[in-house]
Image 1 (spheres, rainbow, N blue to C red):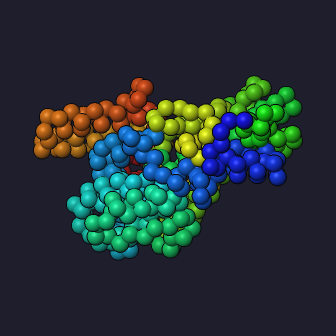
Image 2: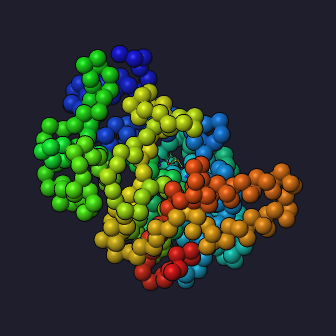
Image 3: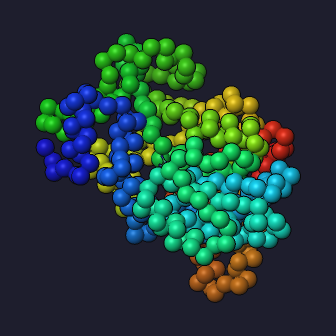
Length: 366
Ligand code: SAH
């Protein structure tokens, strides 16, 4: 048996007591265990951390999202009390850039209370530092459920990929839930439940039903989407979610570990590496649609940011920039929009859910 991380004995104990656990439970423990979870214990972002996100690459990203939110607020009829909610705000950078950019829209900032939904005490501390000088009321919550009712705009960048994912593997006799158990040497290993998942095949999209043996299908509980959609339906508003993933549900094992900007085995060093899985935008859209809100997109990040005018924003910034800063701005735009390796343009998608009364949110016009 390899050396253990602080979380590993706890996982071994749970498996010994209750048997192998679903991949989703494993992922949840690894990321958000109250003492030893990956997010609970650290700030993983940035060049010196494990991964970099769009708001950390350039201020333009948050600024455009801020202008998007202000435009949606106007579509809502400029309500005087708006909950501006961010799910998983990381270092608080996007919120800071959003609020600064949105100053240009009269009345918007005065209408806002910002609600930050963050499960990690370490990142909450970081967000409080980043947003220390901001003159908008800020409230932190561990869960979306704790936000008071009322009109809201929700934004989430790279949040949904961090939510626990379930996996099923297709065997000769049908689909079985994939689990994490212990092998003969006592190391963590992927196994599967003995029983087949009843009625599972019928819930799958057409393309996955005829999948060959050994195929893997992933799904998430859509609690967050249901809760956001319920609130939008009740009090009005919209949501914008940006993440990497696929527009159509399909088979594939996308669970991955990431550490120091490189892929890692998801079963190695639990609690010390980031775990993510692609977002199934189709499944999110179906969940939102079932709650009666209107669904816009998904679009590629390239298309969305282009429509919001990122090129124009970059030009404006470059007027005031040194040559080195101008080069940085160009390289950020390229990274946001590019389809190739290292580029986010194609891999990242953007979806919005809105109160049907609102019309089409900016960027999603046909
Ligand atoms: N949006 C930020 C950070 C993305 S990393 C950015 O783009 O830079 C994912 C974020 O979601 C982190 O802040 C993490 O702590 C938070 N998070 C992960 N799981 C969560 C959960 N279940 N509830 C609330 N926040 C969560």
